[in-house]
Length: 510
Image (tube, rainbow, N blue to C red; front, side, top):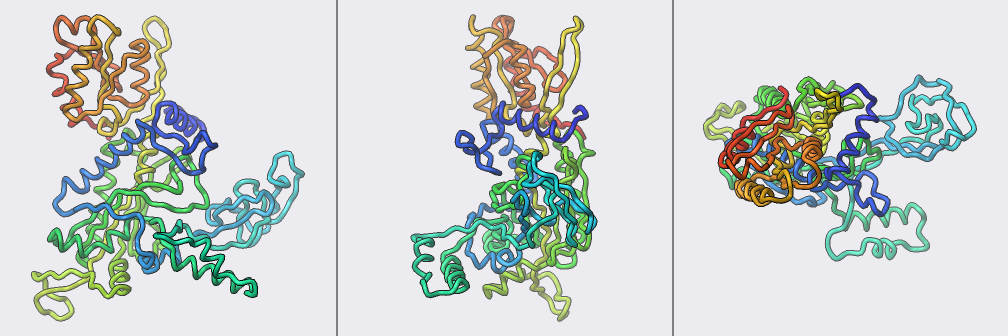
């Protein structure tokens, strides 16, 4: 990719995503809804292919991991027990100049007392004013004004109601004219709490809550894992960088339950596995790194944590967290419900009593990947602009999306050279054969063959099969490779085997 600003790179990705049917702004004809996106015909295939490869690696290729698909809404006491109701919040601040709301911990930092110049009202045409930075040491990220409201905690969970309730009507009925403001607020909160359920802010808690059911129903022996791919929801104060941080997103998480004392070796194992997975499908393996959390970053329940980070256009950003959560989650849910979320190993000796048989609460290693962020990461990794001239001096520049073939929305495109003389019929026969074998392929007869090649380069189709007049006489087609643009002649009867072989053996980058 050429050297350019992060804004230029992201603008090109966003443009490509809309133009080629990967990602659209949600409700665009109504002006759009901030932070919400719809995945188009190619985007849904890319996202599904990434999730399928993750699932194959984490579940199908292993005997010690099984999957679940849990409800998005859970009993509200789950979130009370997990600490999300009381502690899942960000510091919210209002700018008293431009009225923007932002997270205090993400705001630009300056030395306290520094005189900052800003425009009144946040507009560049506004009167210039000056003000000192407060002891907190930050300013508004939009207009740089240091005149800010005090911080208040903003809970990130979306609250709704379940069942035949009318929370608004019930709240109005609970409020009496003679009540003080504090009494009215308390009455409203009480009614809201009685009927409240929440959209899950993470997929992890369902795997802890269902630990015993999964372990017993599948006769799983520790160590084992429970995997899940699904949507999560967070009412983020700041949404940024296209789909990188949004209020609705998808996760690929696995909770790996292991014997206390072995969490260190399993942590090392899963860090290696997850880093290798990303590099397996990427062109630029050096844009991934593993960063250990500092002590002040660790969650109170964690004894070790790493982030898999990717070098996005704006800098390093989290792609996946790998946390050692100790026995905190199972212990808290067991305490709250009275259900023993433990495991009995009859082949081990209890280290406290010295007697045969050991019942313990497993420790947990959690690799939690962002599916939505992975889509953006692999789009950025795949995007290439290639400059060049042919032997006659004509421009041969092209944009090519070098997606790993396993991720590519279409595995191949079948292109009849012309729309007559039996070529479309021959092409559709090939399409039928490939689709029956489970391959998602495209039949494309629009525009010149050069423009069709360019179109499929830009959407990441790894192979183009051109049907021409020679195909009718010798039953062969030309197969063109996306990344190298080289072509070779193969028999139509061999097309399926050739593509399947290439898909199963292809690896880009590292």
